[in-house]
Amino acid sequence: MKLNKYLLNFLPNLFLILFSILFNQYYGYVGILPIDSFLIFNSGYDLMNGYYPFKDYWTIKEPFIDFIQAIFFKIFGVSWFSYVLHASVFNCLITIFTFFLLKSFKLDIKYCFFYSFCVAVLTYPTAGTPFSDHHTLILCLLSLYFFILAIYEKKNIYWFLVPIFLGFSFLSKQAPTVYVIFLVSFVSIIFFIKFKNLSNFISALIGGVTVIIIFLILLLLADINFKDFFIQYFLYPQSLGQSRLDWLFPFEFKRIIWRFKLQYLSISILIYLFLKFSFLKKKVLLSDYLVIITLVLFCFLKIMHQLMTINAIFIYCLLPIFCGFSHIFAKKYLKQKKILGRFLIILTLCSTVYYYFSYISNRTFMDLRNVNLNNSVDGENIHPKLSNIKWITMFYPNNPDKEILNIKLAFKILSEDKNNKMIITDYQFISVFLQQYDYSPTRFWYDFHGYPSENNIYFDYWKKFVLNKIKKNNIKNIYVLNPLHGETKPLENILKNCYQKHNYSETFYKLILNNC
Image (cartoon, rainbow, N blue to C red):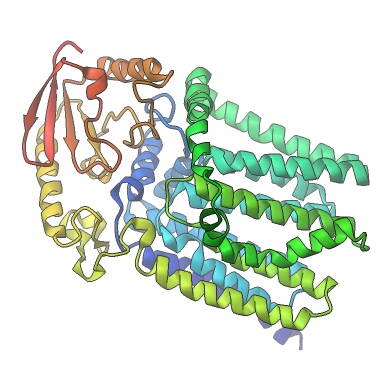
């Protein structure tokens, strides 16, 4: 009997671990979106070799993800396998923690397994490779899980971990982390006032102070000027805040409600319970009430953030999580628990199947929805370390061989130039495989969204940052390999007339600098 019980607990965990990793490993090799697929590949490699964000290159997001990728490269070697494994491990983490949390609420193990399995299918395989929105969402969810456990179990370790993971999330991407920080802080204040648990409060405070101190120490060790960090990571993104906020409007039914109808359905039971407990004065445990409020507001915040992002929809992975919690509270507080439980299972199953075929298998997140993936070629044609990648991009959907020839031409010319040079491209693996630092002044090339345009108040700071980098490293040539997803004339608004342009092909050219 003990052996059967042990296997019953062990086998689901083992299966979820293996499936969540292997499933994402497969999709991490299918399709390429250059600006996203190679961003962290390059910056993780640079950080491993002593080139740091904010100091050596401009960045508005992801220093924590770069740091984790550098660790993966250090342990497993610089390869596409270790790159995708980074994302797969995070897919595994959110899957296993979801299973553990749902099980802690005494939900039937088969339902815990089902909801967690769907999380593994829908979370990271959309991108396959490390990506800021996915990492941030997972870290926010983990902090939410620890917060829920902290409310119920009142253990100091959980309160300590909540701000730690929120800190990691913030250093992956500011939004939506800052919204979750406000949400967790608001509900925590209610909790501390009601329960008067000083040790829990002190633990949370220590966690927050710890993550801040660790980060400041890392800035000091890397010799990163705090002003550079503050401008790039706080002030400049805030200057874009209003433009992103405009994307919430207009408040149309189709955009705000219908587009996210399944998300609203997944929390409909939680919304009903919140209204019931708030206005009908029904008896409820305060811990349950606080968790229900947190889950509902968390869903609203994620929908709001999705509306403000320029990326494809990725929050559908929240559906099985919200359905799982709705299942728990329906079972606890509602008479129609069996019917509602079946409804939630069917909703989760149908939405998982729908989103898998509509977004994951056709690589919609990679802008490959209408592309025939059978036209892909082996990435080994570019470089041995890209072996087994099914290479196809939105730029050359019918002729990836032409794209490969353009990249190989750039490889050849860049390898022949042994001087310090700046490389501008979305194919950021080139400098990694050439083992040449690219001296790029920014992590990714996307005008306005990634760095200041001329009409931005921080443009002069950005201009000085670029020119200092050129002068300090004695850069005479800037190579540009198109297509660039978010740029047409990189750096030309800074260099003005101090360069000559030399074309190698229709997609590859060189800017020869003269007294810039």
